[in-house]
Image 1: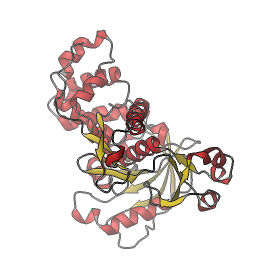
Image 2: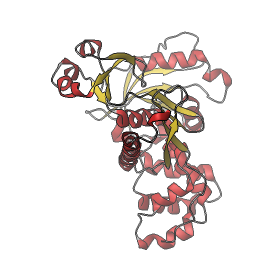
Image 3: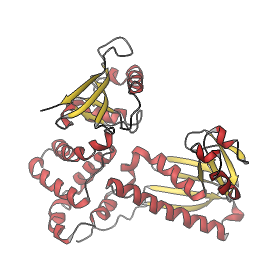
Image 4: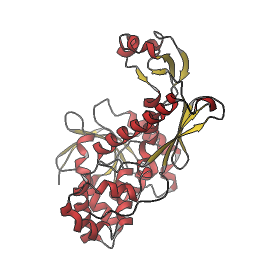
Length: 354
């Protein structure tokens, strides 16, 4: 397969390790730099492989710290994450009862701002055999902390971390039998291909393998080549069913809140409706599935974009996208036309059939 030329622009995701001036040339510092790079490669490859997403391009650099302290920062169209480092120490994050059993410097974890401790590496084995681990505590060395925090902060912005060169790399694994399809379909529609792919990743939809996705894009392109919105919806309709098992609980039931507001009207995304939605989601009983938000097809896309940052990880689906004979429990309804809060609508159990 003929590869497209690589993009000469720098990677969108950049990570900086900050070290005091007198530590920049030390072997241990350079070893840390290499460790962080390797862990990023492994973590991104594993995360992207599970979801069949393009892997981000990134760079890790070593910079002089302005305040002579150790630290790190990650940038993606602005600062993404920042934290402190303590070379030779581990960051212990867990319940207060577990942390009390460890000796160390009290701090706050960079993920949620909860209490944590920097402890000596020599306490690793001790921590694993104490209440700290039994209570779900976690230990992070320097490189693992940088990678874990960046990956957590990247979250729903994964689509921003890759561009056309990374999509080309993603497609490079397809067999030689797809060369003609690659040339006739992808090369002629690179912008549209990238836009739709990013939209699916933005919606946190796991994709089919690259070869299957290329075939899917080509097949739907013949049906809606003049209508990008329809093309996107046709592809999404094929991709979504493979994601529904991720949302179901162990009994095969989907748990959802229904949204009957119109997101195109300014009042529908007001703080009051956001509060209603938050309360409605809290009414979903504990289960091992993923809560959903259901709405009508015309509203789904704009509503998903409007809620993406306020409710990260909340799948927004339309009723039309549910499979036949789906067991669905609708716990609450958020309706902009109602004046009282919380919603009076009772929970209902549906079996969706067509």
